[in-house]
Length: 131
Image (tube, rainbow, N blue to C red; front, side):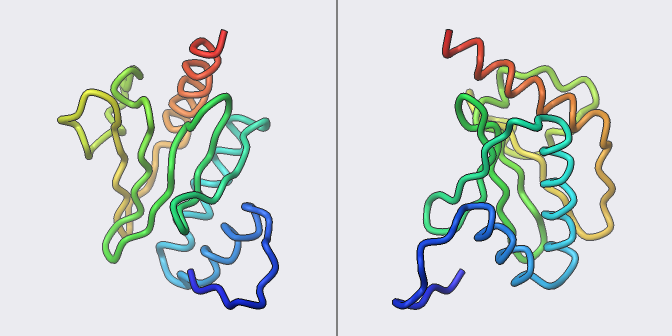
């Protein structure tokens, strides 16, 4: 995301809004949709803007990031390898010991119930690690 020298520091939520608007295609719609699902699954989620332009959703630690590439929107779960995924949403970064990702492509539909369950499980895992 481009930023001029005169731009005020904006809230992460506003930066994510701007990123979605900037995409202006299926990727923006997809990122907006998963953002809505994340907020529905965990109303206490905190939106962050890290690593020079990556939307991040956290609750007592990172739940997931949302990156847009030419052919995919990638949702990387920081502790995905520790989460049960009976619906098989994870389809990327499966070889690592820590992270797991969901790559969404144009025309894909996300299993909303399973996705929200995964978000809640990631937040619960973060909470269990902070106590």
